[in-house]
Length: 343
Ligand SMILES: [Zn+2]
Ligand SMILES: [Zn+2]
Image (cartoon, rainbow, N blue to C red; front, side, top):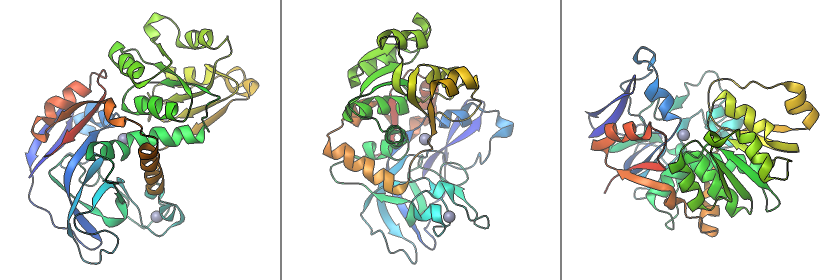
């Protein structure tokens, strides 16, 4: 079977892998869709010498069909359509039982990350623990399931932490796949969205998704632009889905007094002036890291019940054999969602 690996320094490779069989508590998925997530770009761009697990298939938004069961599997059956929650924890500690295997607190358990320390979704097949499988409703396509496996659910959880409602104007920094999903889901929760991104292509996608206003930092300071759209006060809530110090600071300073801000873009630093930026403005800052298995189910229900057209954010569906070229395009950060698909 074919699979995609990252070698560092913006190099990727499609390789042949031997067939794999599920072990105790594991299932074999036939992959049907596997999302490309912005956080994969850190690894893609990183130096070759620092690439961890260069022989493992990447892809941490897997969605597919269960085709074989290992011994002891009780929760899923052959033929089930599933989204895969890409973290492996002990399954017994408090956080694992809450569905947050990424927060597993059992120090003796060897934690895993599908698409990193364990083979991920960018391959024809994938073996994973049955605990990581979340049922995909028949009303949702596999490619939307892949979006929900990380990026779109990450956006949803941040919006729920901010308790976004129809009273809010929300500024979303970054209109990559996570930011675009935040724009669309935030609107479905009733909010008015200000989309911020330096790419006109991405701002066009945000407008199509229904953003109220689009702000390009190349047209002037984003904070000033957001304030001028909000009677000088700032947004009620902001989301940072980029992951660089400048936009983290702007996400704080473009929120109004008593406003809320959520950080989801990963890595690097955040630098604030504590008193003028946060304390004297009574700002609440949330951190939010992906989602739980139960949270993923909730987002999927919300998307079905409210008819949120997440699939409209997909600008490219590609085959695994074209994965190398696909990441080259994704790296330019002006695409919408890109998904590797099968069949
Ligand atoms: Zn992700
Ligand atoms: Zn655990």
